[in-house]
Length: 120
Image (cartoon, rainbow, N blue to C red):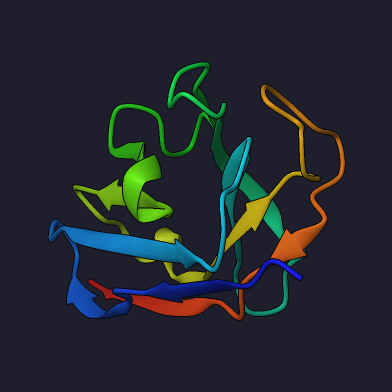
C-alpha cells in the first residue's frame, strides 16, 4: 500500500514563501496537491503527470505556486510564494492509481496533510 507523508507546513506571514514536500513509500505516477480550509470543502490546487509535466493549476494559485517532483527520491514538492491569508489550509498530496501516467479523476492515495497558516 502506497503511503504519502507531507511536511514543510507552518505559520508564516503574508508575502512569505514555503516549500512543501511529499515523500512516497514507492514509485508514484500522476499526482496532485489539494487543500482544505477550516469550514470548507477540500479543493484542488495543482496536478502534474509522471514526468513532471502536464501541470494544471487552480486560478487562485497560478503564478504563485509551483509543483515539481523528483522521481529518483519519490518526492513531490509544492513551492508556494507570495502567500496570502486565504491560502491558510491543510495541504494534502495525492497520488493517482498505480499505472496512471497522466491524469486521474479519482486519487487513490492521500497523505495525512500539513498545516499552512498565513497571517496578515
